[in-house]
Length: 205
Image 1 (cartoon, rainbow, N blue to C red):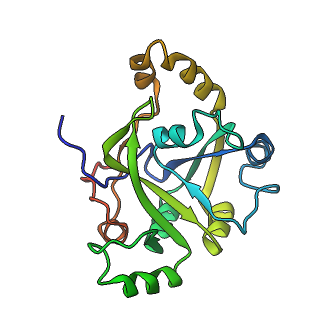
Image 2 (spheres, rainbow, N blue to C red):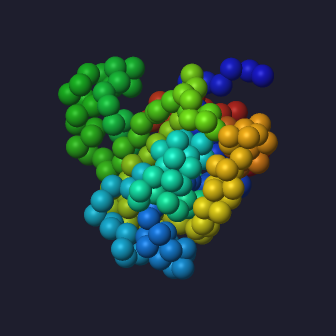
Image 3 (cartoon, rainbow, N blue to C red):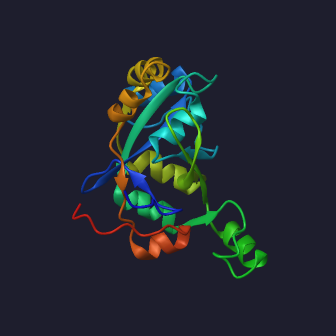
C-alpha cells in the first residue's frame, strides 16, 4: 500500500456532495436532524468545526461519550460549498512553507472567516498516525452559507457509533471494516494550494 501523503483530504463523497462530521449535545443535534440544517439552539455566531475524517471525529468526541458531544452527525454538504470554504481559508497557525512571513499570515487571517488545521489522523483506538487530517472552522458569513446553502442533509449516526465503540475492545479489526469508506478527495489544485493539501488524483467522481 503506498504511503499516504502528509496532508491529504480523505472523505466520503459523490459527484456533487461530501460528508463531514460534527458532534453536539442532544438538543442541538435533535433540532438539526428535524430541520435538515442547523437551527436554534445552534448558535451561528460561534465558530463551528467540520471534519471530513470520521476517525478524527471519533477521537475528538470519544466515540460520542464526551459531555456536549453525545450525538454524532454526518452532514452532507455540496462540494462547491466545501471548495468555497477552503478557498477563503487561512491556516490556524503560521506555516513558513505556506506564507512569506508571519505578517503575511496575520494579514490573511484578518481577511478570512475560515480556519483550517492539519492534525494527526487517528486509528480506531485513538492512536496518532503519521499523516494528517483536515479540520475546517467556519465563522461569520461562512457559517451562514453552511447552514443556509451548503447543507443538503443531516443523518444522526450515533447508534452506529455506540455499536462500534462497544466492539472496539473485543474486535477492532471488525470495526475498521465497518467504518465509512473514505477515499482521497480530489480538491481543485488552486484550493489545495490555499490549504496546503496534496492534490488527490482525479477519480472521475
